Image (cartoon, rainbow, N blue to C red; front, side, top):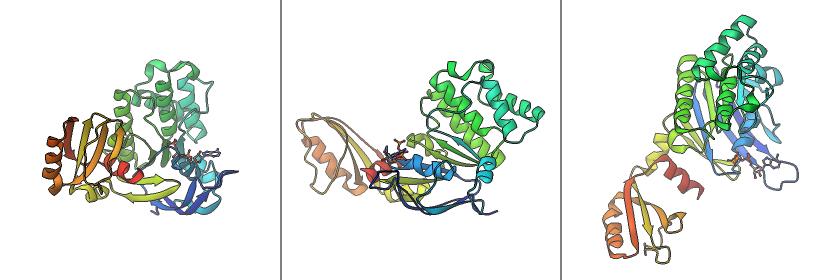
Length: 300
Ligand code: ATP
């Protein structure tokens, strides 16, 4: 089976922009992989996934899906896309939205009815089956949008911030569902997220975007390998009297009077000595580094 995606030298300018929203991005996604995209607001993640969903044309570069150039026919039948906000099918009830999406994607009427019932159960939306979508809460709309994306099992699903607006229980449900459709149906999952710590448990590889470029791609564990020798030191202090750390250390400023530092393990005793001598320190925590720390250190 060929790769799910091969993206080559993709560049996208929006009209009247001088800097590209995507700048010479090359990337492959394996068939059956869960791939996550991280990056600051405006880094170019949505622009990239919209091109991968054939909703936006590249200015330069190419994208193939299962070895074929992206076209209207293969994108419509093979990709389920969940946008960051809003959704089509807005005047339908929840049950109708699932039924029509499955039917439009090629399921017979009876198979589409069975798919509707399967999705209502999978996302625990049975009680909302006859509710018009405009009357749902923001979080309920996200769950309906996710279910519509899954309807009729497209081999690729692309999700732009799927857990936005969701309570912790539904966020966990979304991650479980994505893991399950990937394991059971072999669905390739590409997702944009800001929930780095949650995504870390689900994604198999992650790409980090910054200013339109893909600056790092790899398995979370390997990307974190660079950090394994490091510890995260979070320090809380009176903002008017910051601690005097060595000048070559660049703290990540989390808030006024709250810094995060990534330090080598063997430097820990020296830092603890500085903290003990600084009266303005209100609290500190020393722990092992996470993918979120790597991300923050890279995009800072
Ligand atoms: P976020 O995390 O905030 O959703 P993102 O990483 O998805 O951000 P994009 O939405 O891809 O970023 O935007 C990348 C850049 O392109 C930004 O500078 C944005 O202002 C610009 N941009 C996005 N859409 C358009 C548009 N339709 N017209 C002009 N510029 C746009």
